[in-house]
Amino acid sequence: MDTAGTLVGYASCSLDADDVTEQRRRLRELGVAEDRIFLDHRHGGDTERPGLDEALAAVQSGDTLVVPKLDRLARSVPDACAIGEDLAKRGITLSLGGQLYDPAQPMGKMFFEVLATVAEFEVDLLRVRSREGLTGLTTITETLSRLEFSLNSPRVHGPHLGVILCEIDHFETITETWGDAIGDVVLAALAMRLRNCVRQGDTVGRFGWAQALLLLPDVHGLDDVTHIAEKLRLSAREPLRHAEITIDAKLSFGVTLAVTGESVSTLRARLDEALNTAKRAGGDTVCSI
Image (cartoon, rainbow, N blue to C red; front, side, top):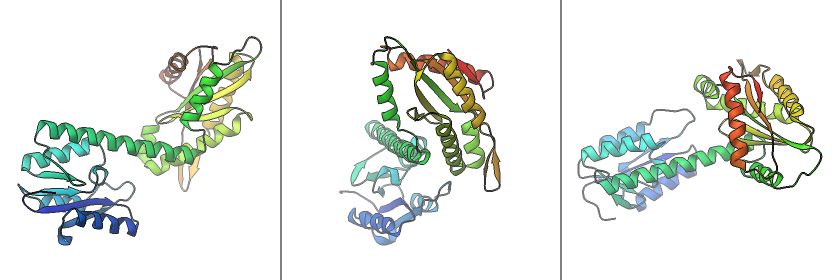
């Protein structure tokens, strides 16, 4: 890595001692002196990063800020862009794993934004996978696979496939008030209530940030699906108690019957319309279409 000025290293680390050792080793390999390495230890919910503050204070115009990977520097796209703007204004070069670029230049700025977007996507993907494991629900991929199979399976006579899309009302407010950890408790508790209210052979799968998709084969009509959704609604609205906290978490429901041969996107549009109608009615509501 051919750079001018002083190399200043930074990395955000987990609480695992091995991770701290690995990040220090990587920064030394990239040419950073031990006394010019600054680290932060990630804690859930922490907003302060004293190590990053020290690293940014240590670099001057003409220096290079060295980071092993982008996700060790920034937490989100806005965060990455803010750091990039600060470096550009101060004439500081950024090295990501040995790749040098100047965020003050158009191509460098574009490169920075693309990398930040990818890093955020990776974090979101890990969060989704983590929450799928937390809730015990069928994965999004498997749920969609089962739905597509059902839509393409002929139903000349007899029972229908009922489909329910539900969403936690005001989930963002819950996480903002109590934090992500309590949000995870709410997700897990509501997922259990959904699973306990359906039949063996029904699918309860994750479908979005605070959504679940239920596939109910062999129902006789829309009234049957609406009745099941109403039972789910009443179960979900019971207050959740965790430690000394009581949380009122409710669900809104969009209900429909699948039409053989229709696309997932067509079915999803109908479900979204029903769910949005339920939410416009104030939430904690079942709407069928």
